Image (cartoon, rainbow, N blue to C red):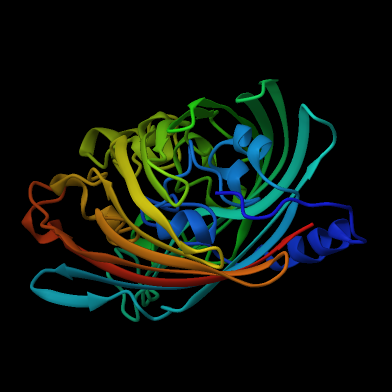
Length: 411
């Protein structure tokens, strides 16, 4: 669905725009497939986050770096408003985690063709995160003094310079080195010996590789793999996270296909696997045995998250040359077991079902405005069998609403 063909290069200043945006993009990012975003780019979010075989804008490297080989040269800037609603029920009392509940998440992408076979791009985007802000102490403290209100704030920013190579006219491979920045703080954890409540930073490095193949005019396939992002430790929280403050970002892979019955209609479908359990601070469970090892130790307790499988699917339809409509659905398996809810009061990433819609309006030559809306339906995990007895069997609930806009310039 490429609607423009550039006849000439126009003057532009992408490096200045990207440098300016990189400062803004440190804003918190919050997500829905566990703590990963359910999709990357406003257009992809309109079709349930699908994009492994269906690149639509220059944020495509976040999903599959090979996709840029089949895009026009373009610059995209987007903003997403995110509103999660999270609650926890503990000991018969319900607590709201919505002390902070409104977030703005920016993204920017730039793609440029160097030759017939080689294309380059740069995407800057929020990979994921989690936030809770309870205006009450939820964890008892054994020491004198008053425990603080509980909550965490985790955000992740990815910067992905990208290059793709066309093997043949319809087949391409791509790679994106990933520079990652993480920011984290926690409060209300005096019970666990954590008294620091300031932000700490972490930096990481990894890569994503991908393939896109146009089998024929009706079918496109894709595959992508992101490595584990090895990150520096959160030194201020070395007594909280397993492996002395380690919080690497887990690897994941995805397969996808896009069916084009005609020039106006595309069906997209992706399946993704995220390996949360490979990072001890995320995957280790909270148990007496883990606590005996000590918080922050190599085999200390974590959030007990399972690996998840994600299904992303949607439809894009060109109503006219100037208007495209989108609908989609996103589903993820549950990362949090019923016997791991106590610690996950801080990170209740339990939503599983998302309904999405979106559109693109080409309002003048080479300019387009895109939008999406998503509702993540309320999901509840009822606690049972938590390590410290029935009084720690917290019930976790969350639903979400999100709306985004992006401006695209094809040059």
